[in-house]
Amino acid sequence: MEQKTDGTKVVIGRCETIEEYRSQYYAKHKEKIREQKKEWFQNNKERIYDKRKERVRCECGISVRYSYMGRHKKGLRHANRMDVINQC
Ligand SMILES: [Zn+2]
Image (cartoon, rainbow, N blue to C red; front, side):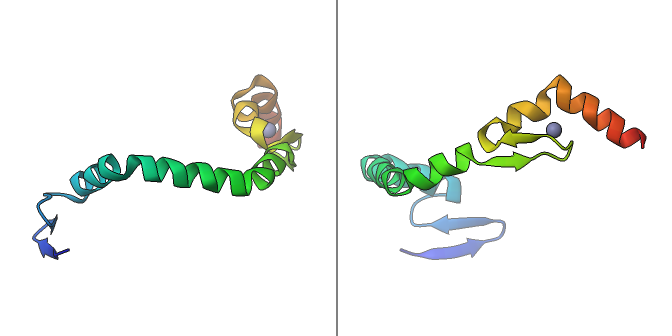
């Protein structure tokens, strides 16, 4: 496949941009990509679930589950504790 730089845009084959090339590649291979993702998940699910259950300490000092961290940081308890910490 030919790849050359044309000023600011990259021309790959008949595609004008990388994004176009990627979306065409995805459309062509989506079944295969889906299978690969599924396989990767099957091979790594133990590790993924362990990671989700792992407890981590937030910067506010509270220990929360990794999967809950996103929600915790948007919560009132975290905001209140951070206020106290920032006042010190
Ligand atoms: Zn927190």
